[in-house]
Length: 125
Length: 413
Image 1: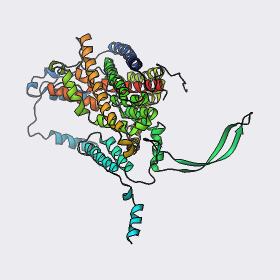
Image 2 (image 1 turned 135 degrees about the horizontal axis):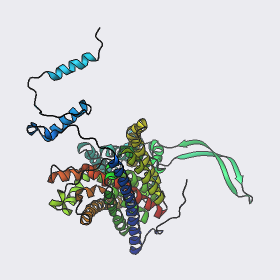
Image 3 (image 1 turned 180 degrees about the vertical axis):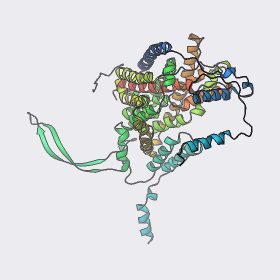
Image 4 (image 1 turned 120 degrees about the vertical axis):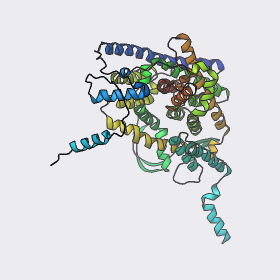
C-alpha cells in the first residue's frame, strides 16, 4: 500500500539556522536510537522465550569425555576435542570412553580403510 | 593535404581532449591502483574507475550530459519522439489528458542503464543480495550491540551540521552526511533522491572510505581505548535458532517500515533477501541473490556512478568539500561507536563489551568487523572478536537505512 504520510520531523528549509539544524539532528538521533532500541527490547523478549524453550528440552549426557583421556597431555586441546567429536559421530552417539590417543607408527590403517570402502561400494562378481 | 589532415583531426576525439579530462585520467589511475594493487573494494572501485574513464573520453553513444544551468549538469537523459493519438478535454475545454504513442527513443547505452539508479532500482536490489549474504545471528544473540550501530549514526548527524555550515543546502548536506554510514547503496539511494548533482562525488567518497576502513579506523580506535579495554574478552554467543532468525527478519522490516516508511525500499529488500536465506526452502533464489543478481547489479551500479564523474562536474570545489566532509563523517561515526561501547561498560561492568567492536557500528560489512577483530588480536592473540563485531556491523546497516529514511521524510525526497 502506498503511504502518503505527511512530512514529519519539521520541514527544514534549504538553508536552516543553527538552532533549527540542531533540533533536526536531535530528532534524527532520537528516531534512529528509538527504532534500534525498540528492536533491542523485542529481541531480548524473543531471546528469553527461546532460551526458556530450549531449557525445557531433555539434555542427554555426553557419551564421551575427552578430558578423561589419560594421554591427552601430549596433544593440543583442540586436537583432542576434534578426535573426541569424530569418535562420537562415528559411533553415532553410542556410550564410549576414550582411554588413550596415540600417533600411529608405520600404520597402513588409512589405506586399508580406503580400500575397504572402495571395494564395499562395488558388487564384486 | 595538410588541411585535409587538420579537418580529419577535428573529427577525431583527440581534438576534444581537455586538461581537466587528463586530470580525471590520473584520478582513475589512483582508483584503479587502490583497487587492483591494494585490493581496496575492487568489486566496486574497478567499475567506478572504468566508468569515470569513459566519462572523460569523447565517447559517442554512451551517455548524454547537458548543462541545465551554469555549473549544474544533468546526465543520462534520452530523447523520445512521440505523437499524440488522443486528447481528452474537460468541461471547460482545457486539455485534461493525452494519449501519446512513442515512435522512437534515442540515447546512449548509459542513458538507459543509469535509469537503474535514477529510478532507484539498483540500490534496493543490491540490498536484496546483501540481505541474502548477511547472517544476523550475532546481532540476535547479543541485541544490545544494536546501540553501537545506533551510536555510529551520530557521525551522520554531526556531519549534516558541518555540511550546512560549509554552504551546502539541507538536501545536499543530508546526502553528504550519509557517507558516515559507510553504506554505498544507501548513500547512492539518498543522494539520487535529494542531491543528484552530487551523486558521483558522494558515491566515490563513500566507496573510497569504505575501502580505506583498515587505514582510517584503527588510529581512532587506539586513541579512544586503553590497553586493558582492548583485551576484554566477551562471553560466547548463544546459538540462534532458524525460527528466531525468521521472526527477526519480519519484525525488523515491520518496525522500520512503520516508523520510517521512506526507508521501505531498502529495508524490505534487505529483509526479503535475509528471509530467503534463513527459511531454508528457497536455495535457488538465495544463490541467485547472493551471486548473479548482486554481481550483475554491482557492475552496472559501479559503471553508472563512474560515468557521472565527468571532469566538468567532478573537478569542482564542492567535490573537495565532500571528500573532506566524508572523512569527518566516517571518523565521527567510528568514534561514536567506540565511545558508546565504553558507556555501555560503565552501565553493565559485569558483562562488558570490548570497545573495539564499537567501530564496527559503521556498516561497511564485513570489513569494519574484521578491523575490530584484527585490532583485538594485536593485543590478545587469543581474543576472537569477529562474531561479536558482526552484531554492531549489521546493526549499522539497519541504522543507516533508518537514518536515510529520516532524511527523506524530512526533505520530502
